[in-house]
Length: 587
Image 1 (tube, one colour):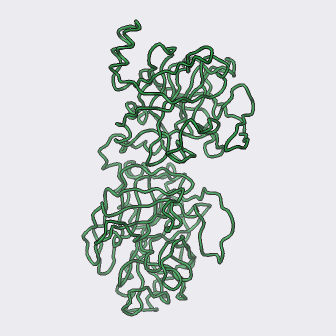
Image 2 (tube, one colour):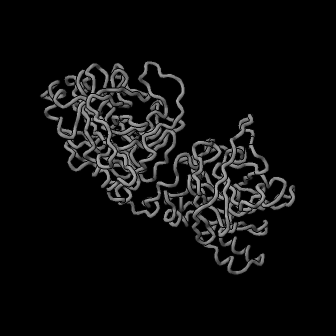
């Protein structure tokens, strides 16, 4: 996009891209309805998290992760089944991307392009590389075009794109902060100040840009803008638009429509505007970078944005739950290997950083009576395997409970991790044999690579899917290797077969009758080469599966007891308790 010449819309004439004011909700000062603001993560927006490496030649190219909220919007070609890059956009919410209305409507009309012909690519840097490591694709399920959008004058040129599943934030995919007016947090006046615009539009010599570019340009007052070209700006510069640029060849151009103008304030980046309109060079349809660029001032669209937040309209009780934003955050369930990489070939050390040990503080620190998993920085999920009426502590990031410092071999080289984190448990919630426990001190997620959260199966497809095999992780009850985190791949067992085996082994009839879809049965591993022969994993051990699309581990079950390989092991089906988890979890 913006190198010496940046990029604006894809349209032959004027290209307008709306600006969206960033909002920063500030604790108790937020007075808007909870339904409108509940999913805007105001404490974690607008921050660069990726490690910066190297220098940029010429100072125009960006680095991967510099603009994690900027997305690429693709359109399916009219005469082709393939998708082509069309516009930019900005992530503002776990379900929402903001862009320009003219990016999602047919030329010179208000008729919306069908959602199946739109595709969002997040975490992208070089559009010529289709296998970028951090890239994610999202289908658009709803397009909300402002009711006042006028395609001839580009007034109210703003649109919201809604995705079906929540966006998982990480170092390369983050939301930008919104520019808010009524929370008592005063942002600076931008006139005369320089903001940054990024995009993949036409770069030097009108060549399509591959790597993401950025350009800084000052905001100019309306009188200056009008005086530069009264015939043009007099028709388009309405009260909700502003101008920016140098008129020297640096700016935005064809292909930058929908992208934002960002300002940094107190270490956070805020979305002030979206690339809006520019004059063209004669009849060529190319932007005229000797003129100012128009942006729509979106501070007046904040209420409209809140009114169209997705949770109030999502019928699914899980995806539409107000606390969905509290799970599946950051690098949850991260798989460091490609999806096809066989599980048994992976190292166990540092591979499952969500596994935790649960015990009473007075118990032997080397013995693990109870396993669990980390859901987010404040909560673990486990079972009724300790006395929850007594004091309970949780150890995060452990591997070998018999050592104070864990080391292991990864890719042929030895690596060591920093110390574990031990935290006491505060509030406890119980349902059946499942336990949701709040930590008294937040887990240091993101600061230590051996402490991360697991993902939960939140979409209908994830919740309903049954796997033939599951990856089980946990500490054992006994044996020479009981101090070390273990892994096994278990075969799922049909519930009818599981019920029959329980009955044949003389289990109480009630135990087999309780086998319904809230339980997953899996075959225990009996290893004659070890003593004891049975791999007797402790309660709370986790079974998980890797979702192919996201290449992340999803938690599917927690072990409820120990059957000592006489019958299949039983696991609580986490997908059946998601509503209960979300109802009780807090920020």
